[in-house]
Length: 157
Image: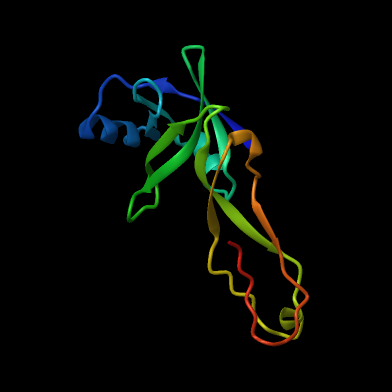
């Protein structure tokens, strides 16, 4: 699994008003769950560009006060009108505990139906998997079978 470095600043003032002030300064309020205590922090909006706007799952190394926490992004909230990032939740992970993550599904290859002018319809973009961080792949790769022109589907269980 790929990693992503994020340098953050801890928040002391919590609440709706303080979060609004941070957003006006192009900062994103965040919370790290899963450790001994929840950590509230913020970072520049531009720091999240390569983390948020991709279909990959990253192990994020959150750094503050010379401490590093390994986490994955669990939930993100966007503004309903402007599509700006409002808030991000992270969950702390460790190498010896299994996690549940949504991995992107990528389909490779062309079936006979697609080559004959048909369309490939992908209903699931992500698949929920459980495992150790070191064992999880970057993506779930499916190879389209070389099947006949009949209506067929590819199912993964």
